[in-house]
Length: 185
Image (tube, rainbow, N blue to C red):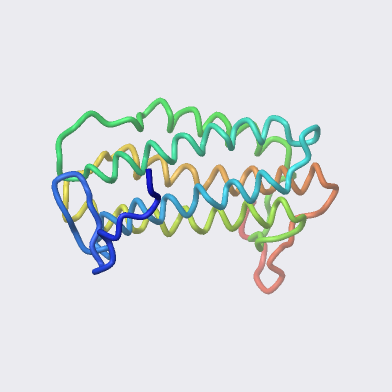
């Protein structure tokens, strides 16, 4: 099997239901979700297999779920069986709570950074927010799996929580935004 088909050379790609422009809102939504997935691998590569074993396991599961989310988005407008579920969103909430317990209480806004692992996870967070925005746009135009939007919303919170836990494990303090006052009490 060849990796190239030449069918996209004119700026179109195949999706369920035919061909669309490569900048079609559906392609943007699942393509941006794929960007998140790719950068999750970068975050995993920065992790130590001992210190971050649980994080690596959770992030690997998330990579599979992001692939599922991309599949759900690829079939937007086509009433098919979806893979992303409310249970996946609930499980993310449990993981958020678990990682949040490792970090100190938040008093100020947190800037991305600290340790290399945390920095990579913050990039995952902002890419996830962009993917979520693309999915919101897609959902205005076509029927989508609402759980994908919820999953991405919760996933960005997960990346924030795990990034802070990664800093704790590295013995590095979060980088606080100093130009504002205390916003969390």
